[in-house]
Length: 240
Image (cartoon, rainbow, N blue to C red; front, top):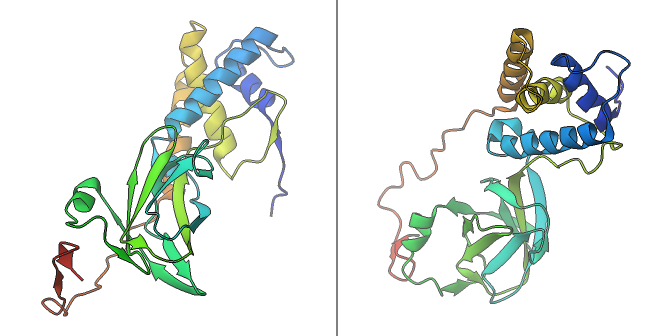
């Protein structure tokens, strides 16, 4: 097994500059050029946030729920201070008295179809995420009537680099993906052509990461054979 090693952000930027021919080995970008490289690097990571398969793992936020309160915010200035979720994972669940209860993560249309949104019960079974900014808004249904924990699994954008002197640890494959794709981003800003070999490596590195990060969806057969066995709840507007 290869040992874990850290990478200096400036080294990533220097490699990207060298790949487009802006510098030779041993040369160093100026302070302004390094700052521009850091800006381009963070902008690229921000773009990757819209490509879920570039995100390598979900993040867990354990949120203590308040009895009688259905809505919470998650983000840099939210009621739960954390990175803003890009997408809620259906693995999210409620924990109460050492027991786990699954949640149905629904769309806006499905949430709006619930007839009595003020319905309260002990354990909520539905979660809707409104992707507001800068904090995402989480709504639980029905409103919980006791203190419990929401274990919120979500996909969040890759953390931006704060300084060129940062030493960072990257999952396997991400170093080259960052360097070659950053080179593609820096080339037009420096009025330089993108070498064909760089373009091929940039594309291939992202494809490889997406192949690694892809998790095939599992077909759920819950409820099959029980059709018609549920009871329609007029308050919830659905079969329970």
